[in-house]
Every structure is written in C-alpha cells, then in structure tokens.
Amino acid sequence: MASPVPFDYTNRVLKPGYTSCLGCGEALAMRIVAQAAGPRSIFTNCTGCSEIFTSRYPQSSWSAPWIHSLFENSAAIASGVYYALKHKKKLEGTNVIAMGGDGGTADIGLQCLSGAFERGDEMLYCCWDNEAYMNTGIQRSSLTPLDASTTTSPSGKASWGNDRPKKDLPAIMAAHGIPYVGVGSCGYYRELPAMVKRALSYRGPKYLQVHAVCPLGWRSDPAQTAVLARLAFETGCYPLYEIIEGQTKPHRPPKEGWKRVEEYLKPQGRFRHLFRAADGAERIVRIQAGAAANIRKYYGDEAVPAFAKEAEAKAAELAAKAQAPA
Image (cartoon, helix red, strand yellow):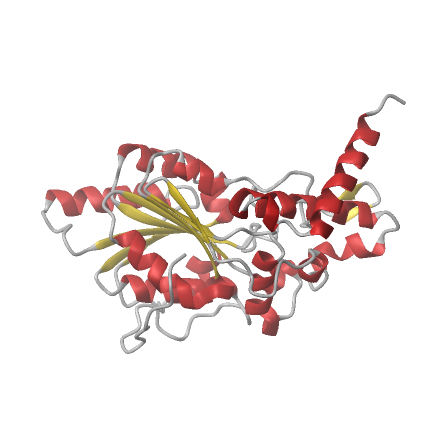
C-alpha cells in the first residue's frame, strides 16, 4: 500500500467555499485527490454531490479546468478531452481526471467507463463511493452494502433493507487489463496523495475508488467520519488495496487486530434495524461472514480471527436451514 507523502496546500486546486455537508468524506477525498493531481489537470465531473457543492452558480471552487457532465458520461467527456489534447499534442504533462459517485460510476455510467477503459484512453477515473445516490435522496446503488436501509430499500416488517451484496467494481475495472486499480478511504487520507501519484505515473486508463462516509445518508455523527471510515477497513467490511500491473497489494492489516463488524455497523442509522429486531443478530452474522471472506481473500485463512470463522459457520448453518425443504 502507498506510504504517506508530504502534501502541499499552498495553491489549492479545489478552493475553500464549497457547500458540502458537515463531515463529508467525499469532499475530504476529492480535495486531497485534486491537490495531489495538481493544477495541470482537467477534471470532468458527472452529476452528483461533488458537482453540486463545488459549483453553486455563479461561483465555482475549482481553480483548474472543470467540466460538468451528465450523470452517465463523465468518462466519455474525459475521453473527448484526452483525444483533443492528443490531437493538439498537448497531452504531455496534463492529467485527465474523470469523477463520479458510486451511482454515476457503477450503475448509470458503467457503459461509458468500460468503453473508455477498453479503448485504452488515458485518464484517471475516481469513484467517490458513499454507497448510495445521496444527492437525489439516498436511493440504493449497486455499491450499497447488504442490509443497509435506503429510501428505495427501506428496512421494515417486510424487508431488512438492501438485499444484494456490494458489486465488486474494482475487480470489473481490473478485468479491463489496466495498469492501476486502487481502493482507498477517506479515513486513510494521508495515503491518498501517494496513490494518486502512483496511478498517474502509468500511461493509459487508471481507476481509483475511495470509500467516502456520508453522515447524511449513513445517519452517522459528522465528527466521526474518519473514525468510521477506518472501522470499515478494520472490520473487514471494506478491503483496501492496490492492483498494480496485475499484482494485488493489500493495505497493511490493523495493528490491533481485526474488529467485529458491530463496531462499524452500530454507529450508523442505516443499520439500526439490525440491532432492534429480535432476529437481527442473524443478519449481522451474515455480514460478519462476508467480512471474514474479505480478510481471507487478501490476507490468508490464518489472518481470519476466530470470531469471524464462527460467524462463517453459523451463516452456513442458517443458509442450509433456509434452503431445506419445508
């Protein structure tokens, strides 16, 4: 995983004055990524929170060239910028950076993104993963985690919330054969500059996904954004890693060992129903089993703590019971 590097905020690419919510993890991540890329960058930004809070007419917080695209085509606009610069022989020394939220990247914009990467268009695509369509009302996306309550997957008597596992978008991007895929976090903000610089050192398409806490959509304490983001990793719920030229390099494991998923889930209102319902513990067992699978995938079976393996066994037992004939 990338090591922290000195960071210069002398001339800000994303200047103060934007109107994000208190504790916005997306604003934190975007400010750091933009600064690491530097002023010789051209940004395309699809519709979403980041576009809205940085460009409230008639002001803009961007000091570098910035283009607002439709919800679905940030990558396509970036492709156009790339080809224009290439044709004019002005590509050298200029970074083309496309941006979008999880909905605009994993769902609505996936076709344009895949096309740009399949063609080998030179750009860095940054996905701000706050795990729902926050700007339009907290609707679920394909990156919304299992059992999270959103306005389109509400928890209640007939539902536990989102009933689908989170899409493995970094793996889909890596399948395009690109030189760099990075998964970072607003909670590990000191490492983001090095990840950006490493990505930009490669020619061709690159992908960076940053886990970005949304206090509004997650119903969490704005003052605990960085802490909550770190807990996502420390429980195994959100793996952090880089895939560089096909080689996976996971983030170093937590110094104090892996934690139970309850520590991450409980501070979030979107998971509150799991702790209130009589049989909510069974749902938490499923989430813990998923976290165990993540830990095993990147660190080996010996790294999975005993309590997580117990949850896996319990989850398998519950699944077998549910599939048994009546």
